[in-house]
Length: 308
Ligand code: CDV
Image (cartoon, rainbow, N blue to C red; front, side):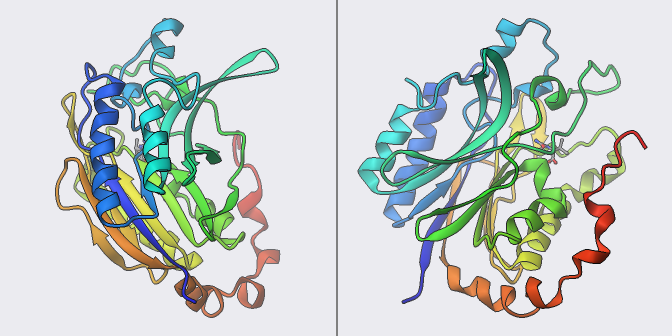
């Protein structure tokens, strides 16, 4: 019997700095209700979905910084999403800023979780490729301080058996790195859940601004095809606090084709019935890793170039 997962990519429009989590969660519940009407098994929300994209501001006060983080998950504000998952028999993927304590040390991660149809956290990923900078940059109209506020994820690139499938996650900048998708591909991933916040303006190379949508789709489509996996890529889009962010949320098939794409820069749901067995057409043929991959010749890829 075919394994078909009905997937929704739930794009969010802008979230202003003053909008609280309860209000954002109400918007997300609307999208989950729309997904329920479409009989979705899984809804994919964006990176840092509960608040505005706070790394665009420079902050020094740790208490002020920590207010953007979730110290518990679920918590009072997010519990309705978990209840909805249980009531609707529908899993969801959520990106959020995670504050946690390990061996008496506090840690900050840009994280994503998969919540299963029973409303339980089934999997977690912590972003590995953190873009931007760690000190105030006076040359920028807006900051991108992910390197200041987050540590590099410490969970690697795992895959998870859930929803009768093999699932993986990555977050925003991760999608631009072929290594991310290949790590998941080597573990037989069938669906990659991915959220992003991508400004149209890239201060280091503004001549590329008109290519932001293209580079988004180029990366996601290549990752899907080269690893024979479905990808659900979901944006936080639109003009947020004077910062324009791309939309273009999409669901991509294992052949690299976009099968569904958002049309607006606002809250919007797209869905697709993803036949997971289609992954085999790629994974068993053109990208049959066992037959055709040549890792003996790829040594440089896993060697550190930091500090060289
Ligand atoms: N949130 C991100 O990781 N954004 C980056 C931007 C800063 C380039 C991205 O790769 O889309």
